[in-house]
Length: 96
Image 1: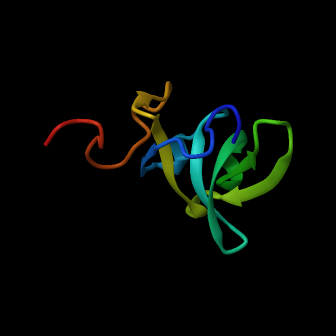
Image 2: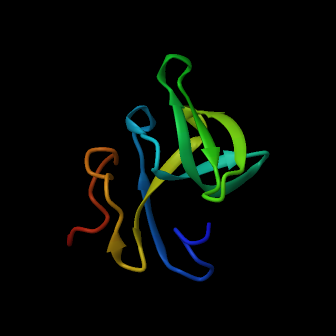
């Protein structure tokens, strides 16, 4: 996903409460048997699904919240905005 995430940048992904996703979140989702990072471009809470896209305007389609496994919380050590309260369990960025 250029320029949000460039090739070879390190990302940190945490388990997500998919019911809290918003447009602009970057998520780890299963699509056609593979797992990819995608941009959330729309949310349909009534049908428990999100629309996933790239950041160049191409819409990949809708996927159920059950197929969204994680949310990108940092790129190259820089925290992503808007992630607070969406992750499940311990914060992966906090020391043990």
